[in-house]
Image 1 (cartoon, rainbow, N blue to C red):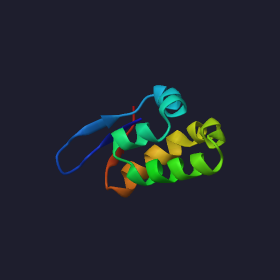
Image 2 (spheres, one colour):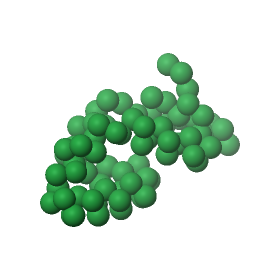
Image 3 (spheres, helix red, strand yellow):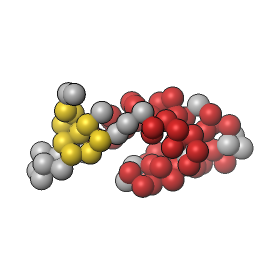
Length: 79
């Protein structure tokens, strides 16, 4: 998926590798991408479930990423 910032034409690309990075790094991936909300929520849920939530969380990376950029006003670029 690719997203474009209409104010400065910056393009951000996400790949299927995000699934693996989220599985391995957990909330650190979302911190690096600037999605602080999911980083904090994921960390709290991970602590409550003793890390079991991170076996499920990566399956939702596409919708989480898409909603994050669209709410910020970015436009999705069709490939």
